[in-house]
Amino acid sequence: MGLLTIGAFARAAQLSPKALRLYDELGLLRPAAVDGESGYRLYDPDQLERARLIAWLRRLGMPLARIRRVCDLPAGAAAGEIAAYWEQVLAETAAREELATFLVDYLSGRGSTVEETASLLGIRYAARSESGLGRTSNEDTAYAGPRLLAVADGVRGSSGDLASAAAVEALKPLETMTVPAEDLLGALADAVGDADRALKEIAVSAPSGEAVTTLTALLWSGSRLALVHIGDTRAYLVRDGELFQITHDHTYVQALVDEGRLTAEEAASHPRRALLARALTGTGGARPQLALHDAAAGDRYMLCSDGLSAVVPADALREVLAGPGAPQEALDELMTRAYAAGAPDNVACVVADVVSLESER
Picture 1 (cartoon, one colour):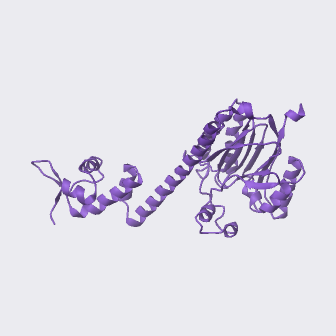
Picture 2 (cartoon, helix red, strand yellow):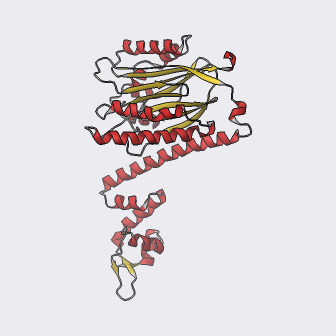
Picture 3 (cartoon, helix red, strand yellow):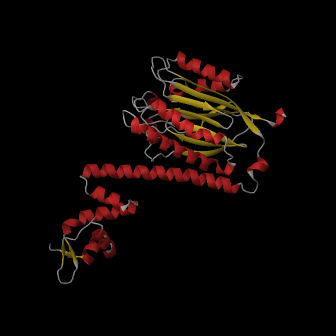
């Protein structure tokens, strides 16, 4: 078969002549020949496979620059690149879904302002970070203040102690900032951006060239609290005696559970259960979970690193957290149980009770 005109080739590839001219200009799909007199582009039938691949990838919404990279790769590597792109799309879609849900909830309740409906609430809190048994360093950071609770778990060998401390430090200015309830998520997102930039500076002088940490934090305003979360540190809520995990682990193993390829029981003992799928890395690509919650007097929140949640089962966490002890007592008991279970990893934990300040007047 001879060369095809641009019109015939466009019909065969299910692309428009206009698209083919654009792909020629971008160097994505050059014609096999150009008629010297008419300037018409001519294409070889062997180019149809590449043209169809381009058409399919465009339907996925893949940017042209990335399509060029995919088309130049061997088949196996191209498949991996497409899978990575689609994983990114799903993650970004999930983040937009969370934001859309928040906006729907927020705008649906705009008939009355937060200040009008919120009771005067405060928190009573305790924080603690300890080295695990046999550990010679502690990469975990825990912080609790009147408006901010935070736990970060730095990755060993990547200046983890500096990374976790810097991530929490970047959030501390929020304690003294005047942040309306409706701006909580934006303020947290900006602070996480500051944290990521701080990690970039640490990575420059780190022996490994990296600075990596997880981060889970809660910021308060009135009866609203904003959650930011990335990695496998966790946040729990105890309400009416029931324990709820309000974060979702960003780990390789949790992704397998989400896909139905592992059970929760199998995940708990999986050899790669600590492999992070998302974390703060200083590279600007962080995709943290952001959510807004309504607090109520009597709620108890607990933030922790996996050094606690991996060794103390959920029923034991509920038993301690739903008990009558004050935050410091509950925290000390949780630490005791972590060490009784062997504490193979460092342990960071924050416990906070939501209390009504009106009754204390």
